[in-house]
Length: 421
Image (cartoon, rainbow, N blue to C red):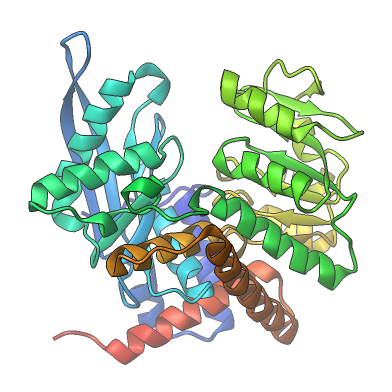
């Protein structure tokens, strides 16, 4: 299946433009560029699910594999009512560069189902997940393509996927997915890994700029797994002051600092930050432009655009989400002296610990959380230094440097492998 031409501001258009900018700076041949922008597989499935009231509803799902030149595909599964093949494809491409930037032997993949989880019961979600897994089971596997949790999926979703695939193959196959419960072959530290990676990279950037985390003000857009844990780690371990947060339902601010542990408990109990009494309501647009030292967009793509980028007051933008900043906004932020820590570097902690989990599953030898966190810090700090040095050497922004680093790594592997037959 071919991918339709991307729209001007679509996620795939953003990903392709970033690839083209980096390829031009690398003086890449057109043949290599075309090899890197292609997708090895784009699978669309439509499948029936019996609902609790007896009705049968059809759902559409995707699994996109971008590149396996350095190893099996790796990427999350998201459930969203507006999910498109364009979005999934862009996320798969970004995952390829991300894995190369942190130097782990995976290629990029992504998947998901177009659905609204708020309208489905737990039993309906299980049936949907198991049927989706069955539909994509011919193309996934520990050595082929390894799903993980993403938006609106979690470790229980991964347990269902692992079990369904194991029934399909006739043997328990822990390594087919990552992000599983610890008791089913999951890794300690996986739930906090993406957020922890964002904060590790942020800390190294603050060191370079002569900033101190303790007492610094941070704003976080998104209060799901990444945003909530980023807030907790920033507050508890770095001594930062979380002055504003927001989710899909509400945005809140408190210039004196929000009681993050209490907010996290409240959000887990109610499903949103809306109604929390320790901060004042603000609009979603005000959230991103709140005065702060560090802004962490950890929601969805294309949140920082040409319209709001001129008003962002943060010194550092650390991207917890995938593709939250448009190319036009990137240029504005750079002109305004804002350091953007790009998604393919900043939020690579999740796929890094997914790699650790996969290795542990294959070896049937599991690590304590302290070891996981130490190895994560080693990988993220090393990746930051490589990207920082590339940016300084080539006199470019961090996104271009990270993209060039990832792309050049993949391009070299592609050229060494050659073309078969």
